[in-house]
Length: 324
Image (cartoon, rainbow, N blue to C red; front, side, top):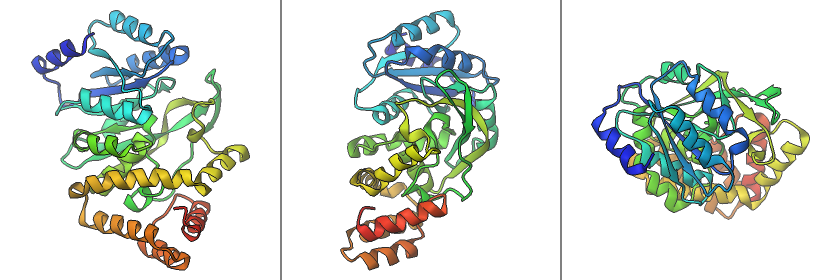
């Protein structure tokens, strides 16, 4: 269970090409953790290991992880202390610590429940290859007791860097990366941490899309996603939820998130395609432009977009008011 012994075991026991390294970031997740762990055990794709970074839980989270490891001695299960700097820093830090060259990389939230074919579907849809590829599926949103409420939104527009700069569609709780994408993310972890990117999944969407990789959005749900007070950004169907989103977009918080993402992308510029570098520079110049009409014209010329017509209208409003 120690980090050093787990690293030693990985070096002496090479993975098969389809090995998936599952990274979980935990903090006080004992209430729902056991169901998520069991759903990982129940995966039809059996070649996986689990690496958990815990951000200072004061409940039974760590005890449950240790008990899980003891109950599955044939599995490589590692529990380490997280950086205690938020979920994004925990996921990215542990991914960099856990990953090895042959591994696929999957992220797991502590309170979800995976459907049995989640990993199998992801691997079959994105493939190994030399091109970085990230996968995410829709999810069935549920009450805390797993009573189904609705299915997450189906994104109608194609993913791409012009979308990633202003919106995330690569949901972290369903995220799976092939080895090429995992290597890309791990190689640029320090840039993300130094820039304090607010969301690990949004950052990864930016990086994969900007580097010319593929983003696959599976229209079929792959997991049950609990809705509760800790994940307001995970749902936006009701009017109250939409108003929360609108306040974030219209305030300075959203612009601050973009500041962090752009700073991280600037640190990774050599990894980006020429087209992405041009788009990145154009967005930086647009945001620095003092004239509102010029900003609006630049927004249109750059082709930045969100996944809905309403989202595009909000973008135009933000560009006009200097809050983008």
